[in-house]
Length: 308
Ligand code: ASP
Image 1 (tube, protein in one colour):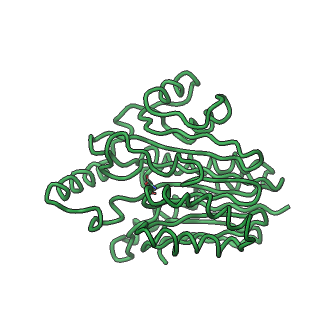
Image 2 (cartoon, protein in one colour):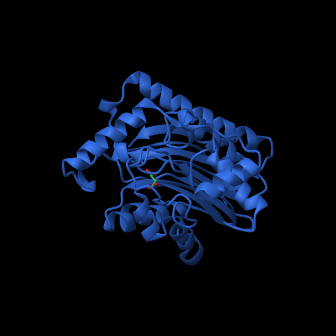
């Protein structure tokens, strides 16, 4: 049986002219490393669930991406991290929102799935659960990166000057990491993790932990999204991809295009998604300038890219 894996590190306005050759090399290396971590699991016969978990952990540990260590700040100058996992075999799912002390929110989401009767846990109680489960914790300084702090200050200044959401640089607002995989046993899984959007209201919940919006996996398709979370929720974006494949037999790429270039665009939602199907096809469309992404499909085609 073939396997396939795709990862993303967020979508947004990444113009080649804004990113130095050195930054680009570092970003591509980070993507390659996260991809290889998941591939090592799959080539050893491991599960899609384990593969997406390790790939997302690698991206969470990398300060360049908006998740875990490199998470953006909310309007109160704090991180509120969100993550989700879904195991397509039995449609088991777990997610967390508003956590502030967990090093790898994706591990906590998985613990919610595996060790509680619930799907979603939030805020201080979710942090307390992480502590009780013995997951690695971190204090606020671990999540403090100068670049994210500066982005918050300039976004707050822009808002004070009367700027609207429409004219903000999508790169400042955006980011999320995710992975989708098919394993040699024919199982699919998805995982997503994010700091959300810079200067979001404290307590805001985005699409990442909403199962069916930013994250979905069943026996046919696994999907992880990145972009304007409110739009992904209003489109039930990830689940909509799966429904199109299941009920009208659309090829994966067409189903993803309908959502990314159709439904999301219709409501002004920018972003993209990665998806894999039961045969190992991979789709990674985005309607923004770029999306950090990497994949190996069932036929061994490997790609790592940022721009269109
Ligand atoms: N979807 C994330 C959110 O809205 C952000 C992003 O992917 O850019 O929280």
